[in-house]
Amino acid sequence: IVCKTQGHFDEALEYYLRAEAIFIEVVNERSLPGLYNNMANIYLKRSHHEQALHYYNLALQKYQILNNKEGVSQVYLNTGLVYKSKNELDTARSYLVRSLEIRKEIGHDQGIGESYVQLGEVALMQANFSLAVDNCSQAFKYSNETGELETLQGSCQCLYKAYKQTGNTAKALEYHELYITYRDSMYNIEHTESIIREQYKYDYDKQFIADSLAFVQQHELDAIAHQAELDQ
Image 1 (tube, rainbow, N blue to C red):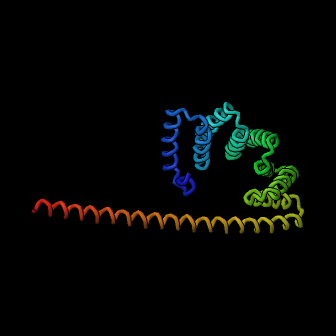
Image 2: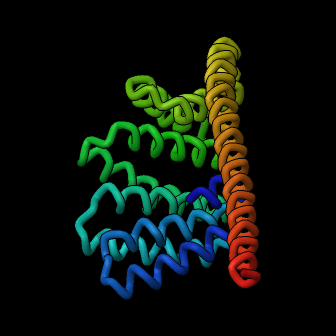
């Protein structure tokens, strides 16, 4: 996961494949669907759509066996994103609706906001601006209640674009300003997290070097002591 976060996708996939082999060997069925979902996410980021769909389908099957409705809803949403990326918008909408229905059923408010944003973006791509407003207004409502900044940002951007297209400049400006506010808040959080990650990496590297030097020095001392014993 760290590799994926830092953009080292090949390395992340290698670790995931190793983990898959271990989980299968020890019959760890509960960990497999999350693993497959993460692998699919990497393929989606690279626009390798068929590989992404393959692993999302594996994740879906495992989540269904485990009766993990939250996991199923996430895979439906992610599968919708694949079809959205492929511009197969009707299929994308069908998966996003399935995701939304399950999230409503289980009361997953944060996820409901996420599903509505994606539905709104699909509506924008289909030039259905009134539906985009309806969906993204719901997304804004739920994300405002949960405080989910990323969904707030996405819903405001969606509403800005939809209102702009319908000629409602006052509403477009209102949501554009809110979008800027949430975007800047997200940037500040991400910037802080980036600094923390860099500090962690620096501390780790420094400790690694110190440990390596200590090992070398100890090795040299042991060699000197051993030679001294031989010389006696």
